[in-house]
Length: 209
Image (cartoon, rainbow, N blue to C red; front, top):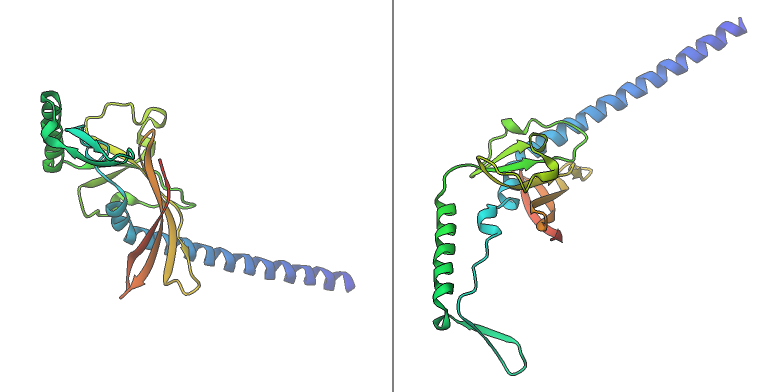
């Protein structure tokens, strides 16, 4: 009799533990689904506020004129009237490059590399501007910036999992954009639910190269 009672007790404990485990799994799945849903909603804003057209961002204007310094050696201004014929030619070419990039209506391709514990079907997310996301696994990661592409490739976007407050009304995630071997920056992005819509309320720079 005592043996039967002991077995029954053990079975009850196992059943109780199994129920608790199932409840924990259900809550975990709910957390993932909520995280996925919010990220899908906020991703277009993240792309717009983070990604750039590398043809413009990584193409500063060339030297144009003579630099003027004060007596202490501090830069004051540049006298553009002193520009050489070669500088004038280079500046015109640069302006044309920037103008062509701004007028180009083709999509700017971004390699998307989400650092997430779950899958997000980002291809179904409609972006607002000229950018289009492609899975980073479709690229040669080791030579991603050395390859020649038939499309306008601009860089790599990385996003982290969102950390929410207890009320699930505010969240924080890390976002980084790399536009070259020595070109990139990262931000801590603060989001908040405003009138039932998730919005970026602040971005703090965390790194730059």
